[in-house]
Image (cartoon, rainbow, N blue to C red; front, top):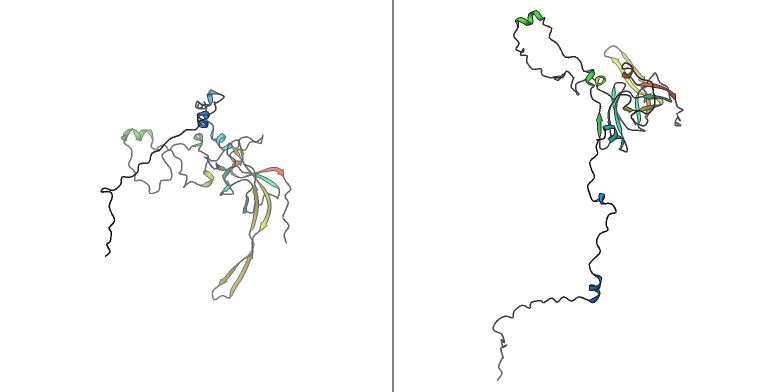
Length: 260
């Protein structure tokens, strides 16, 4: 006769978790090393104190001169261009120049770099005079001093100071830098012709039909270096002569590319 023995339960309560005990032991080598060394002392005590502010702030041209590269926005033959050194600019043919001549840009509107932009401002001495009333002194004595009420204009072109707005003024009336502030030149490379284009002229029920063929002529210019400030002694330019680019006397030899 066989009997099955059930497992005997020795503990009435579950066993308690074992608490880990950490034991710190220091070797003799770690005691000898000690704490890590401190940071090296500065040779000068002024290195720890903040630098004082400069007594004078730099001018806009000095800030732009510290930049590695520059660009200009100028007017050339009635059009506005944004140029950088060594750019090749193609414009309608300039009849009064030859290949190798240099042209000074006298209408530079804006000078900038990657971090700064300087735009020419309006000279306060060149502002137009304020409008005066055409009423005589005798009639003004009988009129009250209250201002006349006029309906507002739909598009105000002139502001309170009498200067036209920048987006409505003619390009030739925009302010530009003086000759001693910013200087730039372009070199005439060559005069080229564009592709042939055809225009067909005809009249209905007249039997008239003609085909006109023509090629437009262009002038290629290469932009020189942009100089900030006075680069050298040059003849002064009057206000009337500054309206158009000035042709310099110096002529350079230009190497023309060989065409197939």
